[in-house]
Image 1 (cartoon, rainbow, N blue to C red):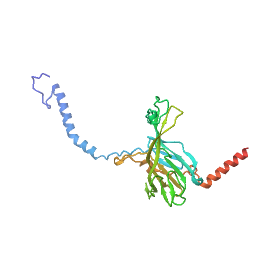
Image 2: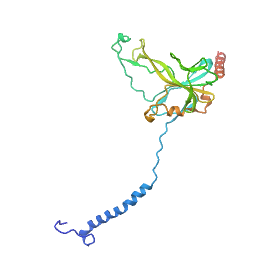
Image 3: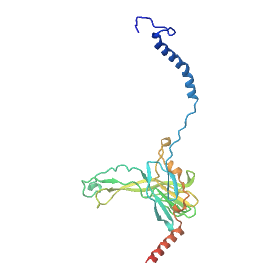
Length: 271
C-alpha cells in the first residue's frame, strides 16, 4: 500500500481494506472474550498433586516406608540373652559415597608402607541400625544392645549413666537416649596392619515396644526429613509397624531352643 494514500476505513470496500479490517475485528473480538476466559480459568478448582510415597519394605517381621536414597542389608538372625531370638539389619545409603582416604605416618599410629594412602575412618556402627526381638521390655527385662536393664531401670552404659525415662516415640512406649560408640581408622588396600583408635562419639538410640510381643531397638536411625529445618528420622521411624507375617518375626526363647534341638536331632539321624 502506498504510504502517501490515506488508510482505508475498515467499513469501506475494496481489497485494500481487507487485511486491516480482519486485524481490527480479531483484536476487538479477543478483547471482548478475554475477561470471560480468565474468569472461567479462575473458577476451575486447583488440581491437587499427591506426594510420591516411598516404597514399603518388609524385614524381620516389620514393615516400613524407606526413602529411595536408602536400602537395607540382608537380615541376620542371632540368639540374644537367655536364648531370645533376634533379627537385625542395617539401613545404609543406596549408593555408597566415595571413601576419603588418607596417609598415616608412624607418629600417627600408621604402619608400613607409609606411602600408601588407603586409611579411612569407620562409621560409628557398633550395633545394627535395627534389632527386633520377641520380648516384653517391661516384663522380661532382657537386654537388647546397647540397652541394659540394671537396678530396676533401663540404662545406656556410659560414665555416669542415668536411668532412662519412659516416653513416647511416634505413639509407641519407648526409651530414648545417646549411646557411646567408638570409631577406628582402617586400611582398604593393605591387608596386614593394626587399626588406629579414632576416639568415641555418640549415637541416638531408641528402645520401644512396637507390639505386645515385639520389641525394637534403633541405633542411629536414618535421617529422611528436613521438616522445619531439622534433619530427623520421620518417614522410616514413623512408619515402623508389624508386617503381619509371623514366620518372618524372630523366634521366642522356647522356639529357638526347639529349633536348635531339631537341628541337632537331624544331624544325629544323618550320621
